[in-house]
Length: 303
Image (cartoon, rainbow, N blue to C red; front, side):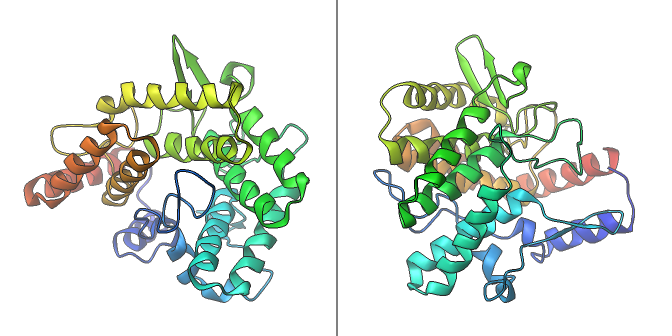
């Protein structure tokens, strides 16, 4: 990643808490392990940082290094999930209306194979990813439950079906031995947070449909794979962003903690609780935090 004005501004906004892409995302406040309610990660600050969008038809937009402004699908999905949580918390219809606007956009921007081109501007040869597929499904499932309109459920199933397609066949899942790994990027090392966001979309679909066969089996298989892989995302002092050498930034380390907390509640698997507490202790250690930050800065400069 080059050192230029765009990236310096991007990193500064992220570190200062002014980046809408990197707002606080602690554990969700309104979810249940038994039914689809609020989201498992708190996306409400995506909305409260850009509250002016709620009363308009405007979508969240993302500036690029070349000065262009794009509609980034994941940003739309996450803003929608933040709106839905705020609706559950406040009862204000404006949040529900904004959520439904985003759900309709999610529906209309899905192609015939159930895909969303999440990375077409960054990686045009690899535009699809499991995280986008899963988060889109989470939006569509909630829209289905609000409206009882079957079109949202069908679209969610198409999105999940493409997500579960092997990446060798053009999908976003790596099937390796007995493991089912959900790939945020199909051409890059496995990313921890993206795997979990994708898994939550599958979890929503299984919960909403009460599936007891294929989708439930995939859900359980991927969860067990995540448990086996989890130690590989950890170091003696910090969490890792992916299965390559990259350490997590402070934002992603915090995100990993909240994701582990939610996964423990949803599954009861004690390893998730173990890592949420381990990574929280590491976050509180001044020396670990400082070393991790310095290493992340060095990696960013070298990328």
